[in-house]
Length: 175
Image 1 (cartoon, one colour):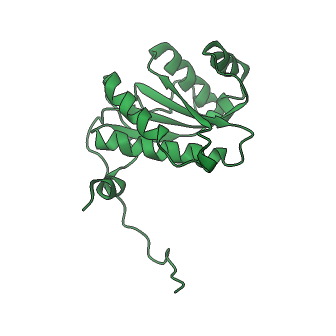
Image 2: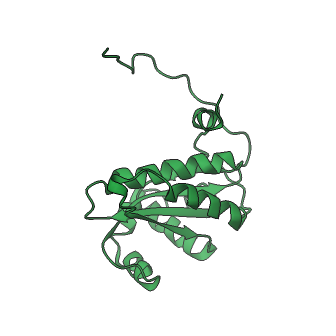
């Protein structure tokens, strides 16, 4: 079977990561895969914030935890050391779809490189907070951006889960 199709069938969300940081080259490859995602009218109206700073990663995790309503100390990124946050131009009509495709490409690329990943929500709420708008500004990012998702990346701690059986009755042909 084609490598891409195999990756699509085998990739699973990982909920336990080793603390070891993936190689920067691997993270760059994953980000590059995201940059080649399909996007509305070729606008490329997304950006990726690559967070490998432990201090910032932990701050984002704490804010994400509060937004999600979990008890203090819960790690919504399951110990993943790298967080790739996808944002999209707020006023672009396909921004949510475009950012979602970036996330999908990055998760497949991580799997292809032997890394685990998981999509974690609440980036929208985080990047509505003033401190994260200021972070973007400090990086030279202007405009209005909406957080689409966090692609938490790292080495899998333990066995990768197997795919659940696919439900029947989800495809309808009109010929």
